[in-house]
Image (cartoon, rainbow, N blue to C red):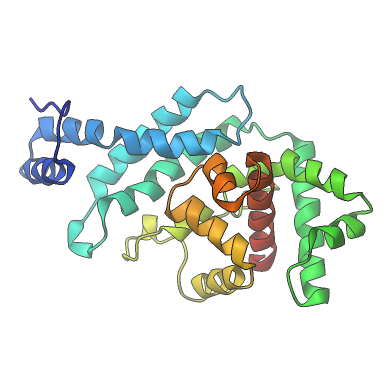
Length: 255
């Protein structure tokens, strides 16, 4: 029986557990799940920040654990991808699936997000660049303060995915999973390929320096919105608004 409490050398522990698991040690599988539980809690904790209070974080983490178990079962180290990188997409994908099943986003919020995306897309086409907030507000016929409220209203949608279905017939891929996606050829983890990846890279490169930094710190470095605010010298709520705007701008470019 494996016990991880009080372990000091994390790398050697993980290596030993994986070695035992590959020799069909059932106890090692359970120990691996326990070992990587903090990864599940970190991912789900970050997701829950922008979710309504009535969404149970424990339910989200339970779904994330299922994603972790799937990642452990299907991980192939010979592909040269770190397990943590591979697991992030599986864990977050499972959590997102559970949120979609809840269908917690009100129709009015979906409509507002779709309106924002359409306006951003139209302005990008006419201006040849990403529109500023004042230009978006003018096109919507609202004040900047009202636009700030719109960003707050639709932020829960950006938790789900870059291409979160605004209509139920649509499908999409998760931004976080795309940004950390492994480069193997396994169909379940091959989220975007070829031209689609190039489109995303082009869309990200068109963002401002601060926006690109925010994406990198949030998705690659794992900073929370509060930590992002501290790094960028803005409030947590403003960091959330900027993140929401970035995701909708990327959606518009990839549509």
